[in-house]
Amino acid sequence: MKKAGRISEANATLLPATSRKPAFAGLGHTRWATHGGVTDENAHPHLDCTGQIAVVHNGIIENWSELKKDLLARGHKFKSETDTEVAAHLIEEAITNKQLTINNFAEAVRKVFNQLEGLNAIVVYSPQLRAIIAFRNGSPLVVGVGEEEHYVASDIPAFLPYTRKVSFLEDGEGVILSNARDQKSDIRIVEAKTGKTKPPKVEEITWSAGEAELGEHPHYLIKEISEQPEILARLAQYSESDIKEVAKLIKGSFGTYFTACGTAAHSGLAATYLFSDLAKRHVNFAVGSEFYFLESFLVPKSLLIAASQSGETMDTLEAVRAAKKHRSKVVALTNVEGSSLTRLADKTLLLNCGPEKAVLATKSYTAKLALFLLLAAQMGGDLDAGRKLVKRSAKAVGELLNGGQIEKLTKRLRDSEHIYIIGRGVNYATALEAALKIKEVSYIHAEGFAGGELKHGVIALIEEGTPCLVFVANDHARSSALSNAKEIKSRGGFVIGVSPREDEVFDEWIKVPDVGEASAIVNVVPAQLLAYHLAVERGLDPDKPRNLAKSVTVK
Ligand code: AGP
Image (cartoon, rainbow, N blue to C red; front, side, top):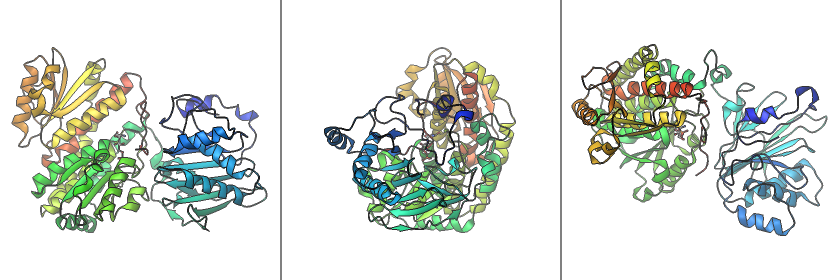
């Protein structure tokens, strides 16, 4: 059963439970379209001509068109426009004239996987053999080890309700899961290059199934926003030895570079200000998807700090691989134990903020800011001062969550076409993050930029009533941010000030507690709440916005 759109839409087409036959294995996949339109035919799984080989896939098969040409010449019939379907027909070719055994089938899948160019993960199901064979190279794949049943998924939360025992697959590794008749379910790890097999290395992860459940919250987004005070309070006590170890790496490096994508990138940009303010140290920042075009300056003494909630974002991993090529050291800031990033990095700082299931990153963003602040404080010679700032921000976020200032503002902005957002200094990053949150989930065009850039062009967009969010912290950027607010006001803009102190230029004032250098951690929370309430107010799904995936595992 496959359908364009959401799992729920596919479920609706399933046979009623009473008329379904008992199943020994299941295969499901929500594919982010890269080849062909978002159609039922292009949805996964893809079958071969016999219908007995089903494939789901993550990544991009870069040599798919020449493989397809050859298969068409051999008489294979294709039903979709996808690169993935090529794998199903290649396996069909490889197993033809061979006795259908689990080992022969696994060998066929292995040989085909080695033919696929690019970064991919495939999961292949044979109903006849009651076997699932999967391989990964670059795209995420992890095995869940159960009592009688086993799982393979791109992410741990997929099987967390059933098992916390996992076996992480390295790049170039695969797994054979079989449940042959009257045999105990079997699980073997297999090397893609050689076909050698070995038993799985099973580890227990710390996340509990409860953490991945909604509980009393209507949506994961608001659940995860509301978890931030507890997470920040915990991060304020982060392991001293880990912070000191990374600070030592930064001190000893010949140039430190932050890289990441999307929301994680905004935390990297904010970190450059935190290091300048708290450590008087320059660190460089480049977004992950551009980093590998800049890598030529890296040397073995360079240090790359890569931040990624999922630890699976392909562009960030490619930046890390580029750094590894130059033998530079890599430090990872990530939320997922055992993720690809942790395996590439020389040192990992875990965010410990529990599974983040909403597509919008919220708690993982403030967690990264807190870790960067602690690193900068350590570099500046006063880790305890950093701990106090993070602790203050935990309390402040708690107060904001109980504030209720945002619902009223949501009503005012719900039909806006455009919202402009400015910030200065570290809150320039907050402005970018606020705009991303609003765009991602409410589909309102929100644009964030450095307040000082207004007069260099963007101010042309401001007209009577244009809503503008202005972050005005109690720091050395306050007066500049206020004069930018006045520039907006004088062109008729509606100024919404997010600030510890009121100012006459504000048409609407969102009061935030004053937490000094930790302002970026606290200031983003009203924007997270605004994005959430705008989505709900506009009847949109806050957890699964259109066109977006939680972790972007394609380049
Ligand atoms: C943020 O809300 C988005 N989901 C997206 O920008 C995300 O931050 C980006 O894809 C990076 O993800 P990562 O932190 O898992 O690497």
